[in-house]
Length: 518
Image (cartoon, rainbow, N blue to C red; front, side, top):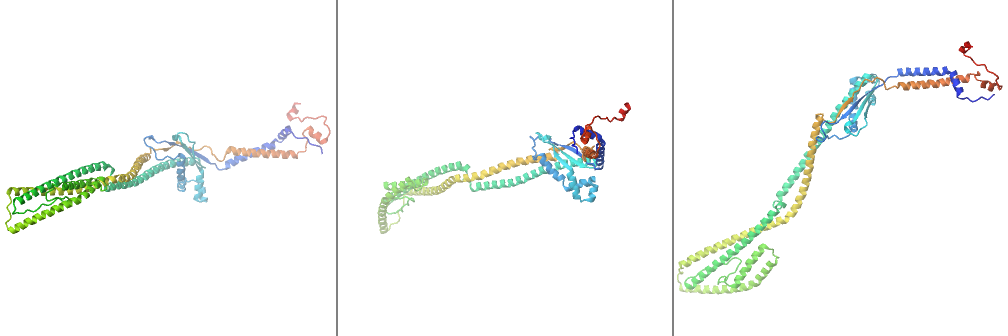
């Protein structure tokens, strides 16, 4: 069998021209078939509406909104509500959507079909928050119904946005109100605790420290003055006692027929029969007074108190010995005098009027001095108790101050939080009023949905292109198949390769027009 020469591009072109109808006819059939398929397939239309997120009308410097989430997050929340089964069932029944599908499948499947036909797309967010926007699209078979449903969905989104914003604003305000009431109760309890603490610690509070110090100083001055009054009263009582004693002694020596009673002594002091003029007794009484004065000012461990006690202890045996000796001598004199009176059996002597008057006067003054000293000692006791009380208050003041600082610190912190929460509550109420009056951020339809002119499904150009490509492939296949069945010679090389002899001459195949011309 002779060898065949390889094909080149010219051979393929000649084959294509020779078998052109095998190629053209399938292409035409494929295109016509695609047109038929396009006409037969159901048409799906899409309507889209563009919604602008319009900022609030009141500047945020005056009223700050409590809703701070992004448009995408809010749209996600709203979409969950709008695309819920309940809402979509209402829309389907209102516009009588998918009537054929509802007859054959459950309503849940119809709802899922409509949910898949709805698309909510957030546009590319710009730098300014007020320029955000999003689009809502719906696909369906009837152009008019698609437009109406799309506008309905847009209105539902706008209404739901108002409800969501108002609900969030009310929820924020209600939460802040509850927290404010709770914090107000805590603040009242802390205020009552501070009030009760101040009532319990009255007189020991830090702000009363200066007053306590002044009162303590005044009490100490009063105690000093009272002690001086005691000494003065005791001195006067001693003086009057001395005068009385001298009058009695003078009367006994001047009137042997009568007898006089002896006077008393000052409590806490010693006196002799010759009065208080004895230096030893006077020194002893002075030390006793100095000790009482020192004990009112200092503690028992103070060096001055200890020194005075030591001096009194050293002097006390000598004074007692002296007083005992004088008392014995006085008793002997009185006993001998009484024996004389009994022996003589004389009537009581008659006192001199002047002497009696002086003795009455001195006795009254002596009793007054004793009463004044007694009152002064009682006052001294009261002053010492008050001094101890105020000293204890002053000593307890630092501890009370620390306790009050802890209570006040918690109270101030709670008060600061309460004031901050109150400010937020006021802002939340203003934001709530802003949403109720629809002055906050709103959704505004920028481009409403219109009746779609061309369907989006099926794609006509794509179907025609597919039909043409299928027809072209079928045409090339038929042409190649027909060419492989053809055994005729079409070129000189075909004859030479088949016969293996050279061709001397060829007669061209003239067309009908060329033949007529020849």
